[in-house]
Image 1 (cartoon, rainbow, N blue to C red):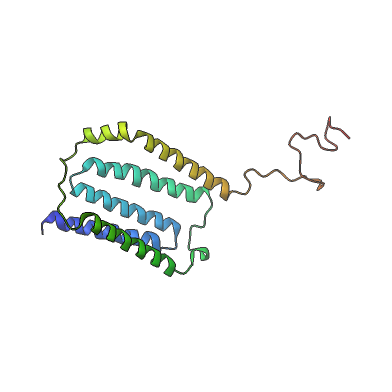
Image 2 (cartoon, rainbow, N blue to C red):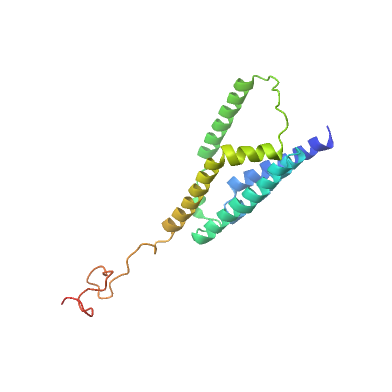
Length: 190
């Protein structure tokens, strides 16, 4: 076992451990911070595999942008930050579904490759990667950014009951009119 292998194993253990903490913690902000550790360890795996560009994209986009977006969304929506009784549900259905999905994916992987050797393509360069991203995959990236933005706006609108609500009528006779032409308003009908 070489030093690179040991480093890959250590970073993989950190990533898996932090990923397990993301889904098991009851504190939402701590889950976001564990996600930072998990994604940072994955960037370290990319560095050990000599994929520096992918590692820095991982740090900039996922650690720098997605986790910050997640934490800002939590803060903007006034979601409970600490432990919540609403999240205290039985864990056996999630463990059953997660285990079933994991076994299904493992069976699919074994069936697809049947323990054969796969010839690797030529190593990629930053130029080839940039060509693929900015020519072939530019539309999916833009659609994904619009989807993330609409999800954030939707979360803010759903969590704020005061957005879109009409102000109450101070007289108590019904909903207030937006044009201030109700009974007794200056210039209104009697």
